Image (cartoon, rainbow, N blue to C red):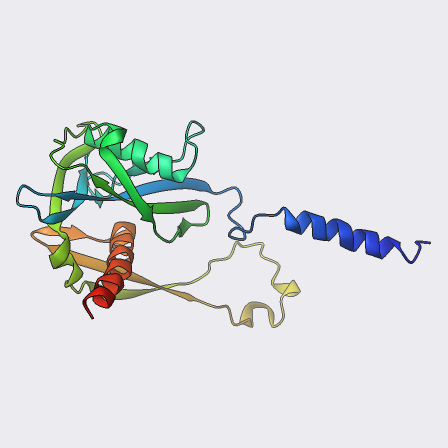
Length: 221
């Protein structure tokens, strides 16, 4: 039989554990981490541009698509921010010192086992790019000010759960008739200067534009 003080000791132990716990996203503790860099650079006339990569068609994942520089967080990286800078430097053929980190955006759960950490950075003025042909077919830039005023096309995609044949419906209230929740994912399409930007890249771009547009509007008000 436990004494009256045992539960207090257990509460104290739980409290100490939670005091040192760093909250994250439930279910993503073992997820792979990827970092991308929304990369900015001024053109020859001093106009701010957003840089995009047209991925090489020989890549195993997402060949020929449009993306921001980025890649998986590796053990050598101190954290996702360093990953974003390292990958951008490698893919664009510039030194890491040529990139200044401006800040972080919201983390995106891209799938059940992948978290994407977006950052924003600016390339120093006058730095020439030399993209890695193994990863990048082409680099192009779109004007930041025009993107701020652009309204992308939006399509709502319904995501429904699929269950294995041996799913224990008998343990669920109402069994197969249980009202499962579906989720709606918005897909954005930026059709700009002949380029089509969609998927996760478009979601990150829209998030970046929304965040910075609100700040620009407040400053101009």
